[in-house]
Amino acid sequence: MKKILFSLLAGSLFAGTALCASAQTAAAPEAAAEKTARATSTPAGWLDDFEAAKKLAAAENKLLFVDFTGSDWCGWCIRLEKEVLSKKEFLNGVKDKFVLVFIDSPQNKKLVSPATAKQNADLVERYGIRGFPTVLILDAEGAELAKTGYRRGGAELYVAHLEVLLEDARKLAALKKEIEALKPGTEERVRKIDAVVRFMNAEEQGRNATLVREVLNFDPDGSKGLRDGYPLFTVYFPLSKKCDEIFSELYKEAQAKYKEMSPEDRKNPNLGKKIFGEIVKTRYAELKAIAEELKKTADATKHGEVKGLLEKLFAQVKMQLDVADELDAASRADEKPAAPIFED
Image (cartoon, rainbow, N blue to C red):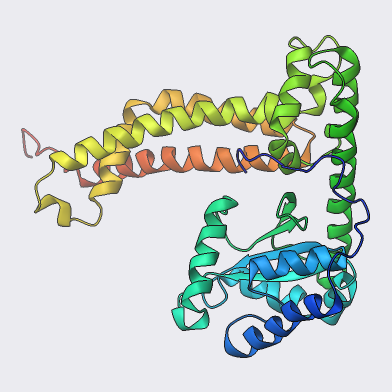
């Protein structure tokens, strides 16, 4: 969840666009969709030519629904396809708003043409895709409006979810246009930002970190009552940073120790766990204190998403402590009692 911004084209995101292409121009991408669906992993009714999809979206005044997937290996991608994307409730629910785009990264390279494989790899890099499935909502120019992925609940709930995403995008676009003329850091501007951004979910706030930081910098001590709307930034991120720092140090130490081991020692499948456990023991008290802080903070947090993130972070820290505990227990079990000095 981390660290990506929500790019929008202010002022023109959802404005009606006059059709600028003839029916003949619009028909070409549709024909391409039918052709690729027969020859590749691309489903019928979807496009895998990104530029053709953008042209069709512009011609039909639609947005792009872009599914970044691994069609033959990614379990969650397959579930999204089976439970949502192939259902008539989804296809009927989105047909008037979206051009459907299928960006596949399969293990079986025969499922995509060489040109499509190169295009897809470039798009994965361009949009910073870090996991599959990832669904992006883009405008006809390719600017990102919203991001989602697999969600439980089926096709109808997924369509409703898309409506919420689009509404948030409209609000954010209007906000950005409204605050353009206002000086950064002024109370009027900050209050306008807060009125929209505080009601976003944690992921959306993370994408709009620049706006959130402006609000938090305006209220550094919480006296203006703004900080309570951003527990992702005020609660989770500081604790996550603390954990990242200590984990990074532990892994560096473990790597250095591993390099010191002989090739014969490295054949031991438990070597890595043993090395890491020994290093964790040197920071055990510090890690235990962090775990206790995470548990206490999670229990006190009312924000559901942030509470879940804290609980996951706690589980990660506890797992490191458990490694050290298991190592200690195994060491004690291996110890043999000393022979008695005197025998009866």
